[in-house]
Length: 412
Image 1 (cartoon, helix red, strand yellow):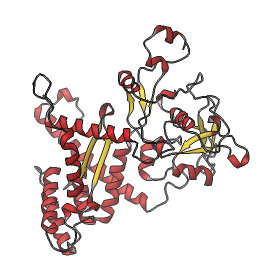
Image 2 (cartoon, rainbow, N blue to C red):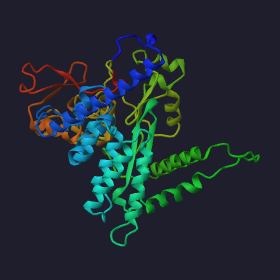
Image 3 (cartoon, rainbow, N blue to C red):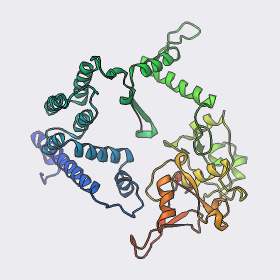
Image 4 (cartoon, rainbow, N blue to C red):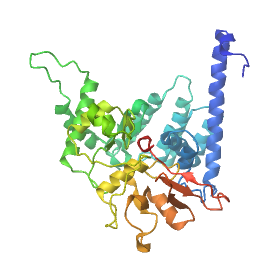
């Protein structure tokens, strides 16, 4: 690489170094994939408390779990597709197109022969290796192949094969959520039918046309579908409660009345509220949601930790689960990002050993880490600040230095 500062380079120098960095980035990606493939063949995470390589990578770096999962997923696919792997490691195709081609070759139409798959693999790699190719062009080629084989009499047509459905909902910048999916014809028609009336233009009473774009109208219609489903309470029970949005906020943040603020001298004003799935939201939005919701009041101590909510029941009550969500955010095990709705309420001192069901004896753990606490030498305690502290086995850390558990910003 050029050792000069960016401002010292001329136009050609800038372009050359950018291209050099692109090649270097691909080489690093290639090396990471090779190392992850090697990790799959060894028990490198044994006893570390992580249930998967993606979880370990997320917990050991500042990479988002989605990015870690994509990288590990690519490594897993390329283990099964050596021809695509060779093209990727040579630099002929980038990670996204390699994933597209490998995924198609691992899940081809049911009536494609192995010879047809090999031929399609070569065609797709040839297209993906062109400088002007993009993911949409490769995806279009895949769709043409699927259509060709989907028209055969034997097997389910690709367009109607629900086993090929995909749906992604990933958190992006500012807490926004990007939604992307690929549905079979029947479920696709069902979605479009439901959206049709909800996304139609709605002129104002004075006859002014609806100024929303078609894309915005469809987004509004989809959000209305979600609201109606949520209000109907038709979803399954998760984490002991019906589907709902949980928003955690300081009482001091939620009121503008100075008299009420004066009654809460030790309460911190964070300036934001917190949701389980997308993180911080503005206080204005939290107040809007509070206009039509059920409010659970949870008293916190000076460290922002919920106080005891009772000791009578063996399983955590709904208010206790909500309080645990405030304190732990999700799975309390260090580096785990499992949301609270997918977690168990674990007794630190087991119920059968006389352990009470109160907040100082409960933590949220995902299924994997719940088993880890029960079946390995990992230990957990509630520290002086009434937050979880984990102690690794001596096989991992001979000194068993304490590791603070996960805790959302609202509990800090």
